[in-house]
Image (cartoon, rainbow, N blue to C red; front, side, top):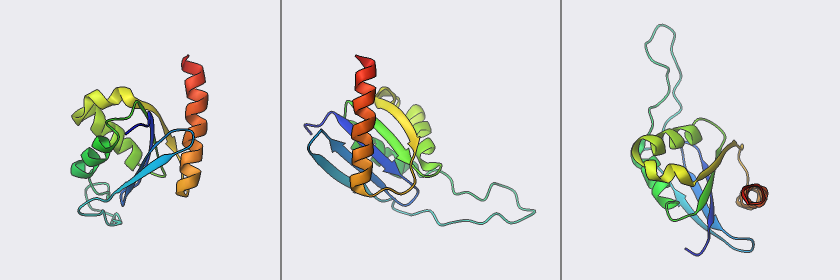
Length: 128
C-alpha cells in the first residue's frame, strides 16, 4: 500500500484497519473465526469469566498493518491491549510500529480516520 499511517479499531467481534494519507483511506475488516461470546462470571467459580485471547485473530490483525510505517491502535475495551500483548509476545518486530494506544468507544469509519489523521498530524510534528 502507498499509505504510511494506519489505524486499527478492535474489539472481540471485529477489527477495522485503515491505511490512510491526508486524502485517501483503504479499509479492511477482519472477524475472528469463532467470535467471543459475552460470558458472565458466576459466584463460586474459578476464573475471571472472560474468554481468552484469540491469537489467530490477533495475528491476522497484526499482519494487516505490518506494511505500515506507524499505527494507532484503538478500541473500547481490552481487545486493544490484548493486541499489543500479542504483538509483544508473538510479532515482536511490529512493536516498533505502534505509535499509540487509545480508548475510543464505537466511532464511525469517518470519525476513526479523522481522529487518526489528527493524532498523526500532532505526533509527526512532535517527532521531527
